[in-house]
Length: 80
Ligand SMILES: [Zn+2]
Image 1 (tube, rainbow, N blue to C red):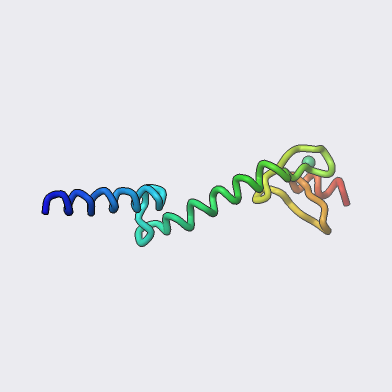
Image 2: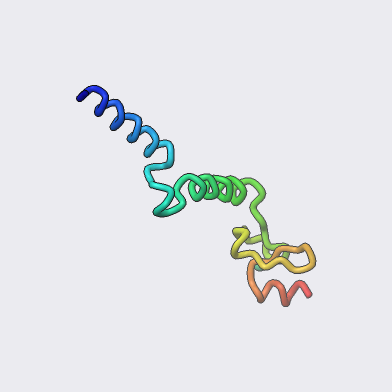
């Protein structure tokens, strides 16, 4: 009986760790973690660099205008 209870606890902990230490109903654990890894890999390999000054910018900070990447409004104005 105690052994069975222990097994249930171990399985529970394993599932908990598989989900990244977070319970999905609380913070969308597994899905959120996978998304972070994807965006991390994306931001490292094809880093966008400003076409005007060459500054590396993350996808979220970049200003993309007509397929060109700019780091700031100033560079966008200069490039126009
Ligand atoms: Zn720039």
